[in-house]
Length: 265
Image 1 (cartoon, rainbow, N blue to C red):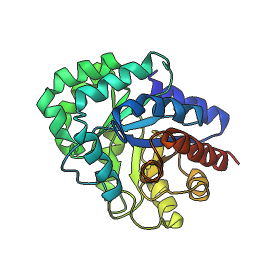
Image 2: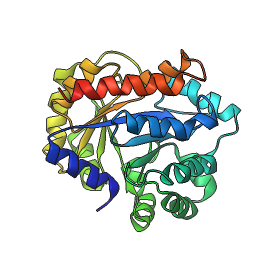
Image 3: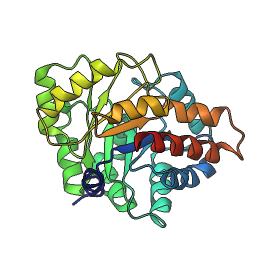
Image 4: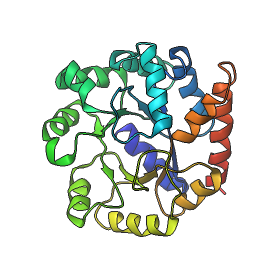
């Protein structure tokens, strides 16, 4: 059983939902990334989504775009991201790590080489925004062979046919984008989100997580009432932007601890 599957199975047995933070590797500085990952685990997170910095994102709002720009100024690339995962694994062999990003860095490295390197580093899943399921059979086959789950996105505009395709193709969990827009934008209508999650769950046994626009413990608690996971990203990056280098990790840990407590009420 993969780390992702084992984590969701454990949570189901405990009648709890997964808390999944997103941070960009190398932001606010490369030295902070691995300590930040460990601090998030201390706060009670269940899966870590680690963003691969990229210069031309499609789904990321201005907050996450800025985080990528800062990381890129440090020269952080895909090889560096994999090195952070390897370092993290020296002390944590349990918490799943999912790389989230775009196709270009993978294509540049070479898909087979990436799969081998990611597996060796201890990566558990990949979410590649611009590899839609209709065009990612090669990626799926390669990741399956490497024991890495490929995670797909669904959105409020996803058709019944797209939901079925993703349900039949995804591994690990499905990521539902709760808003029509980019990360960090707008306010969530939890009633509409719940209806869509019910439609997705009717097609799959995979866990379904909800992200985009979740900013506080109360919203996370409501989402956790019907979804299997809550994904939070832009709010964490904003917390680091308003912190000093010495306090950024502690600020994120404290924020996530509060969200975890709210979800577990």
